[in-house]
Image (cartoon, rainbow, N blue to C red):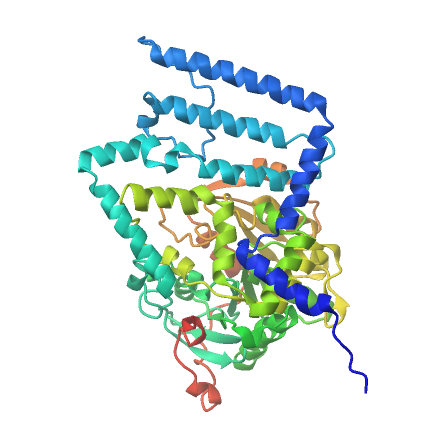
Length: 579
């Protein structure tokens, strides 16, 4: 009897690729090689570009020499800097960097940054993706070599060391050893113990009313005598725990909505393990959004729902809403998307990690483990914001000996989850790589869906400094959605801009409504026309919801008495506690 032998490419290659991924921090070296070759070969055949770079280098050398002489000579007129860092770069903000010789060090570093950016960009023939990858790699290496990262070239560290007699370095060494031990043992970040789930965060009263293999649906207890008849369903991203929407009592969006007189439901996703490797995007749609809507309809029959999706949860909710519209399902009263992308043409710096080589490598690595680890996700975000998330923390913790205070948002961010292999592969390919949703190719139940079919009003929030879902990318929903659209651009980043409770200092937002059927503005035209408002966007949103809700009614019962739901736990449930 002949036995069919599996091809070696199907058995050996994935194991080799998974090993390579572990050794390369899940980065495709082949993708980096292709980017380098594209840039280098085109630069070699561009003598004019190389001449421009030579002239730039000589000009910068002259500028630095003149600056050095000006600094060395005693005079009342301070030397004019050769290069000024962008406003977002705070590495050299301290006045100590303006004193000799540290002023020359940091000016030399900034000039290097400019030269490398000029060398990598504008080379004729290089693809935009490869140029972006090379520019990113150059920034990473330059960030490593910044004079601010070393004790002997950082004047702030030297002054602290002299003032404290080296005690800061001793504390820094102890901090480093503590971090190493926590990493080895898998312990939570220092200070996270002050934010216990169910006690300090995720503490809004409620109970689980549905549990399946993927979600627990939490219904929150009313705090007002009457509520709006339309309940709110919150669909958070499953890349992190749901309680970013229910942090401390003072900044909990869930608690705020309950206090405004709404019946609130929220999905809590299961933290997948190896046994959940085959969970797909369809499973997240069916066991997630559809199952939650079904449970709410059973509890509150004939009530339309205000559906709210955050980040990846917002993208999934948009897919679900498009499928409902296609199939004539009118259970939604409105749709709110928070920092959620629907068109992935320009998804920001995450696109650096999106190409066939990179996704194939991740697929082979996830095929071995069954999921993408939280550490892998965190590493990608750290590289995107290496100064804020890595180098500034290392300088503060290990050189200055200062531990930053942990807050609830930081504790939530450290409470990471995994991503099942099949779902994550489909998400990266269908949305990021192929942009199937915006192109009308994304299939639900075997038939494509289109966002233009959605016929309920939408409230969409983007954040100014979002590295995960840049606001220009989020804004593209204007070109896919034809009903009434209220678009808000708020200060803050991907998380802090959404967790923006009333009274939070320094908050502001812009808002503009596009009526149903009206033509969309360009993002820059929108920015110039949108009204500027001080404070949190939350009250503007609840006023928008109120205008699309019925008159208040008595609050519903908690769950269905006499059903199996009575045996389910109180909020925050069990899934959120899984590590």
